[in-house]
Length: 84
Image (cartoon, rainbow, N blue to C red):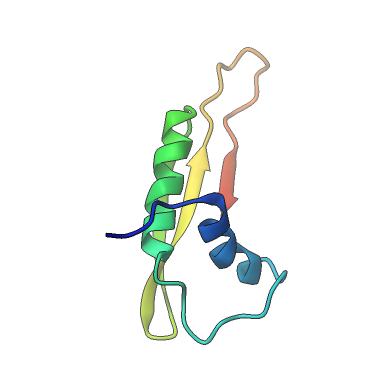
């Protein structure tokens, strides 16, 4: 049985991506679970979340994209937030 995704398990993946830790020779095995958990959390918060796949090091990876729909009251279009 796999352990649940937690802030610390996501941190293991996120820190190297943000230059806060050395890059590991391989990706954390829970990367796909972390992406899925992040998508679910963003959607629960009202974001329109999706992924964009890309190839790196012979693997297909996913960036998480999230947009927060606006009400249009201020005349501002919804912004796109990129995480990852």
